[in-house]
Length: 561
Image (tube, rainbow, N blue to C red; front, side):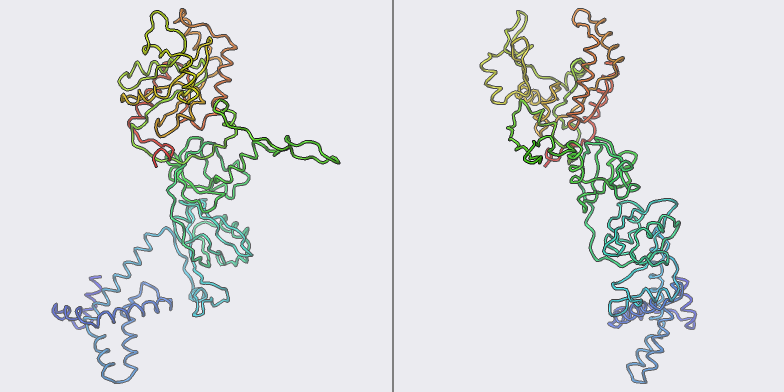
């Protein structure tokens, strides 16, 4: 810019700007009009296909001076001509010219695309005339863009046939077309690489697939504003692979995930197909298309009952089949597991909370998988941080037992009244005596400032999963038959006086029960650990519980708001 200004000064006979005269010019009312005229002339010059590298300011001043000179010899024209030829105006215009050129250069270097060079004829055809129609007869304002494609990178465009027009129905967030920001949902593609589209979606797809480098498009712009990026986070409760989904509209642009992943749902404009990215992990920076809640609910419902109500039908008149009238069933907590089997667990909206806010840790597992031994080791290892509840029972205390030490001993009448009042998180009968864990016992541990460590029946998770208890649920999964048999053999050998040996049938029963628990209640689990050895599993649990106190946690959003 300084070199240009020096050149201008030398061309004016070595003129050196006077600071006072420049200051007077800047304060005058004429300067804004000059700048406005310059901007109008700049726009007109660009439409005439002048290359940006020319010294446009100097050319425009010369044209303006010539135009004024041709209008006649009135005093105002002469005064304007004198002003335009003054060194002050030339210096200001040169400076303005340099700033605009630097801005254009910055824009070109910042963008990720290379716009193809057009001939004046092609450029003229793409202009919109004063009537709002293009010179070649097509309706609507058109823009000519260039998308840069690197290698086999997918652009992330999903196209559809809309009444004979190739329309952009979706742009995958984070992919090439979205990053370059030149297209919007609703834009209509009129031509690609100089070839007229004529409503042929497949032709456009093939052209995009086969082209490398810059892809030029003539596009009829949509004037709809895109929705802001969503800030919804969901924990997914099923596994998904877009390559295995025959209904996916764009498998290459799909996002695979595993049960338990937390996704940021970045776009929900289409209720059937959302756009999302994994919150952390290998694919954290990549967005993709996933099935939406509405679509996945329908698909899972059909998968569970593909025949509809066929088994509810009975023979009718003339061989026709009539549907048997369904009978309403009252929900009871004693049979809640039967109702749970029919729940569709797909997404769970979550929010982040600060470290150390979990009030309970729950170990879930089949009988004989080792969860009670793990719970005991955790409490012994960190007695200042963890404690557990004392169960209530209706049996009589033994001679060496005290109320409030090993159990809370209550009468059967009182315990049954409390059970009827839903004051127990779980209860059962053993040797004709009632046993149970009271909800107030959990609250007492929490009030003491410790984390309540529980090993309860999986059916209790529904009542525990609230903002009051904020449980962190760990499922202890059974290992293979050989590993579990070895573990029980070692435990029986080390504690022969207190443990009864496990038969092969008992071990198979444990594995089968473990599989059923995971299948029915996995949507409650925050973590799953396979117990392949009590020492190794305890070390893993200890690391997890330490991290629980040091890192943020994703929890159901209704625990926070």
